Amino acid sequence: MSSKFARTVRRWTREVRPTWALAVPIVSGMVGHALMGLADTIMVGRVGVVPLAAAAFVNAIAHLPLVFSIGLLSSVSVLVSQAFGAGKPSEAGDALKHGLAVAFAAGCITVIGSFCLKPFLDLFGQQPEVIRESGMYWILFGASILPAMIAHTCKLFGESLNRPWTPTLILLGSVLLNIFLNWVLIYGHWGAPALGLTGAGWATLIARSAGAICLVVFAIRSPALRSFQPIRWIGGFQMVRFQRLLGLGWPVAAQHLLEVGAFAFAALMMGWISADAIAAHQVAVTCASTTFMFPLGVGMAVCIRVGHVWGAGQFGRMRRIGFVGLAMGAAIMSVFGTVYVVAGEPLARIFMTDTVAVKLTAQLFFIAALFQVADGLQVVAISALRGLADVRVPAMIAVFAYWLIAVPTGYLLVFPLRMGAVGVWIGLAIGLGSAAVGLSWRFHLKSKKQ
Image 1: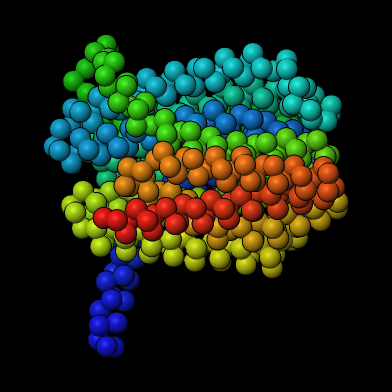
Image 2 (image 1 turned 30 degrees about the vertical axis):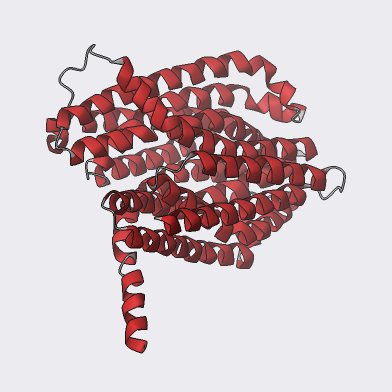
């Protein structure tokens, strides 16, 4: 009996190493992306509560088209990987070419939308001083989404061709450039004017543009990727390829938009409360978003591995890979949850000096600790389901969890019950918990049927 149990344990634990090996470079790239927002939050927070609140407001709204486009472009990874496995390098190049066209179009629409929406920012119900502080940062951050999309497309291209480390190092380099430019332009070092929040906007735009240029050069000129270029770069676009890209990407984009949209609405509710509330929310959600990159990377690795074994008909392994990934995500987030409980207030003081905002942020960190495990479980579960090509029902679960549970619960706790900023985050925690249960159960049922 013990021998049978030991064999069972070995079958399950042997899935940890390959999943983690695939996840490490993906996690590194995702954390690098998150560090840019973390650096902005720390450095702007030193200027004052109002600039930090303005940054939170802009990030909450402007990140909606960003995450939607990231989801839309996830199909580039699928198509390039399939072409690589089928030994069709020119197909991989065509996927990159058409993906860059989609990224450019999405970025241009976002830039134009940012300019058009600027006169109407006061309609979001934020504090007047927050709206005044947001103006130029809104334009610069919106403009930075165009190079961010181009960079992301080239990053997916490299990762799908088993060349993940160069894009990761380029992204980390752009983060370091962003931090340096923040230091120069926010605070006015090296003879530059002290631009405050506007300086952070310029730093983000310049750093993202530099990263995009480097990644385009890598995708086109790298000797390791030279054989995967399209037959021609100019012209030759095909509507059927655009349809395939968008058909694969839109369910993922919709799911991303639903989750981030709930957090964006939470930020708006914080702005309705006070500048301190939205500043505290910005710090807490930035930290939570950074730690979220770790289970997200694990989830992306699980998605790839589940898809591989599902295609090979190894359904028992598919189930083991999925549940081992869930355990890994939960374990990682348990560690971060403990950090938030133990070191919430010292962590808040890294970002800001205002006493009221620090104490409120520490309270939000405590609630964040409660939903860390749920957040890890839901992202790994939905990624495993994506590996099974199951995207529609998970999107419905996301609608239910975030927009029928999280947002209404948060609104009820904030305004009728007057629980303030803490009520918003309690609503988010309940919504994430619901998503974790629903998506994990969905994977259990889908993998059990195979």
